[in-house]
Length: 309
Image 1 (cartoon, rainbow, N blue to C red):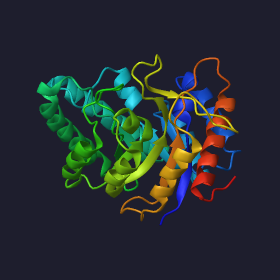
Image 2 (tube, rainbow, N blue to C red):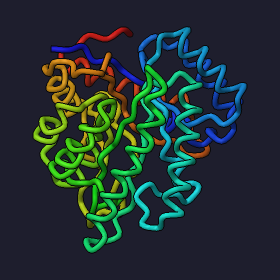
Image 3 (tube, helix red, strand yellow):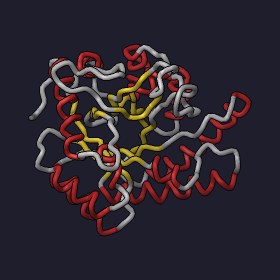
Image 4 (cartoon, one colour):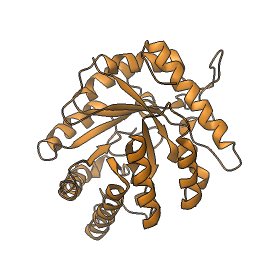
């Protein structure tokens, strides 16, 4: 058995303002008044003085910090699995810089993307060069005693269409990677597994040897529905928690209960869970935070797991 800890995915909830780094950071400062969260997920901060402030905030509150490199890499049209050698070299170089920035922020996990699925003909070669890119990034990570890398497997055919999709295939590939990169872990996402038509509990069992974090994320898995796909959609509200999507606290709680039944894996001090819901310009950001907090607390209750309110 292990204890699970709640994390706040501020990158998604505060999405409309993350480019305004001073304002984004001010929201993180305000978040300290909410005792529920023990972890924090952010984007990379590019302003050195704000990276220092984030580090101080993380240390002051004892947060585990996950920094998502994916938005910055995608924004620069880079790809760690590119078959273009020049693009791949620039991608690795940029990702190394992002890892250095994340380390300055006090990150434990640096989450890296895979790359877009371009068809079956190039899949195996893309996976090979991605392997090489990850090994190169891992060489950079090894200089930081408390920093590791995480990978979020995504769907290959439904929505995000990334090369590392079906979980059984991902774990087989990842097992080989771990022989070289022991501080590399899985960040599991319920939406991508749902969109891949994979049983969530079986998927967790496959990910178990490398599982460091999870996202509970709602989605619609009906291709005929206009909102089909991974849109980081809202979760429901009490008392019925209903949405168009599949996710409710009973399902979320059953997943947390399963993970709590596992022993902690080597190299992971604390296993964290967050709810991934995206805000849009004009949304009440603190209202959205309250929505995900209420939902995650209900998932903990359904799982019979304790949390600090």
